[in-house]
Image 1 (cartoon, one colour):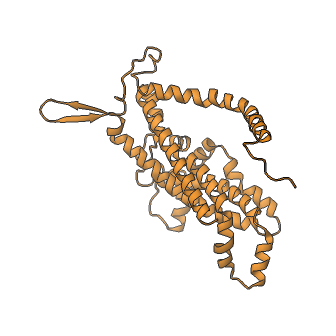
Image 2 (tube, one colour):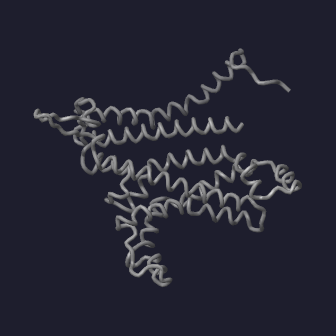
Image 3 (cartoon, rainbow, N blue to C red):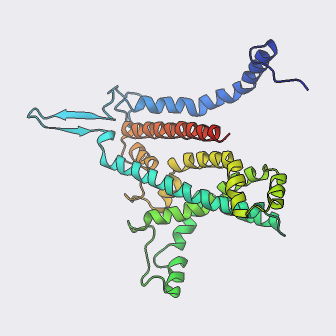
Length: 315
């Protein structure tokens, strides 16, 4: 069998060139669909653009991000996105939502994947049924859960009242104390199947001979899970966490539909949308969108680097 081809050889260079030619159409479409709007957004964040004056926007530098106004008496005041308390509240809400939702979805997804990986009658039907919440559009899921959580007509309040778990109906999506909990419940319900699907794909690649050998040696199932299964599916879990964290960091539709105009659940994406279109602060909203992109990019780079270090250390 022939060995690997060196990238420095003539054949290796031809293969690399052919790969770039195959990728070129996709890269062109990606640049047109994502790269150009991103660059325009970054540009507008350094201008005074409004919805009615995009073409005549003037360059203002970093004023949308930070500006210090000196009053001349030794005092001053900071303005801009980095000095905006509402922006930092949105950052906190986004990070909090991401950490809690991704953690819960990873744990529940791992449990579901382990169950679906076992041999039992009707496994195919159960696998299809588990994916139903993920297949439902987010807007539909949000509206459905909004009715279920309604303080007067919702089935959740009715069920909890009958069971004696609550003494009065709860406005789940309207109350500042329960709004984030409501969003997390809906998101975990909808996205856990996605995590389970990715982790199940990793479980399917684990050789069955390893489990047979462990069974013959009398190794306890719990020890098999932590010493064999978990290390082998760690790359699949890492990929699932990265994809889910990316989606959670830019969450918009679920928050916007389920808990509109709520300071406790306003995320960075919702903050950017409000300033871009509702408040006609297009440049300010562009700055928020740019910072959101920077935060997500840094998070992905950090996660990948930590994941590689962990995998190499256990390799």
